[in-house]
Length: 444
Image (cartoon, rainbow, N blue to C red):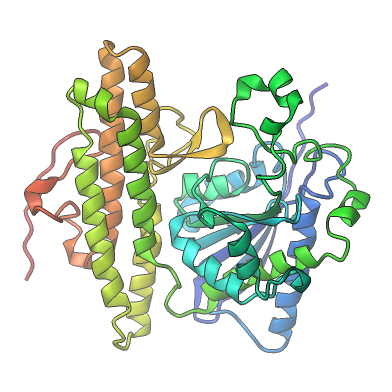
């Protein structure tokens, strides 16, 4: 029997004292598949304690520079309905005003190490915050949370696998809002389904795409309070994650100049370009299709980011109005990655740089439309319509990267976003539909 049921979001605000129309949103969904002691209750309890701490600051006379928004989302497990409905209903207002979205779906699934997914603009501030938080268990030999995290993470601290496993999807896909998504996770080297005979007997078709050993507990009736007593009996790991969550929010809400580094965006742009070249370079060359336009756009962004950083951090005094301008420019970088037309391979997704792996929603994909249209063309390389889609995807990728670079240039220089290494002819005004556009520019 099907029933239509209402769902509710609960929002709390601490109004900003200087920039009340700029929001730092901290969110968690509160519905569960069963008892939900891991997902979402570990995150929900952590958020409630964090809100209590912020309320004590407020009672003592503190107020943030920007508005803090605490969001308890309804119907997360049904497809992030609560967050998505709010974003869609107020898409212009929230999209234009939100500085960052900080998401904790579940705080604890194990207590080996932090797992942090973030868009590049929030990586630097998250690492800075982790250095200010005490390690959850000093007996392990770590003094700060950052020490614990860095010592146990053998690769990069941050993952670009944004995927679509939680409410951050609504913000980075529909709005281009900078996001961070964090939890305590397992030791993947020790616990890996690939090492178990059952994996090969039952899940061989998933190959290496599913190796989360936490699934035997995750989303099951065994997510009880008793299970959490085994995982985090003193709640020290809940506390550490809550402090990290709060400090990131505090830094973003209180710093006059947002602690964002636009140069960090270079890495995923380069990584995505390298991945496309490695996977499809020879194939594209055989069919006379080039990544040169995207290469020029990325190079132009790199130059714009370096110039912007030098201006923003020159040491010269900045007025409040100038800081507001610089802050808006920084946040506009990742907003620029959203193609309002939607992606060709999935029109529910709109971010042309950070996407979701169509084979596994928990995994991410850089330049998703380009990667997926090329994969389809490989299967039927003589289909002209598939190549038309490849060209459309490439044009959209060039368009959004150029737009990100334009966001960082002087406000009256927006008409030349492609002007970078090689001059105007290096990548003249290609529209997102692949059309050609040349603009003249004069300035009095």
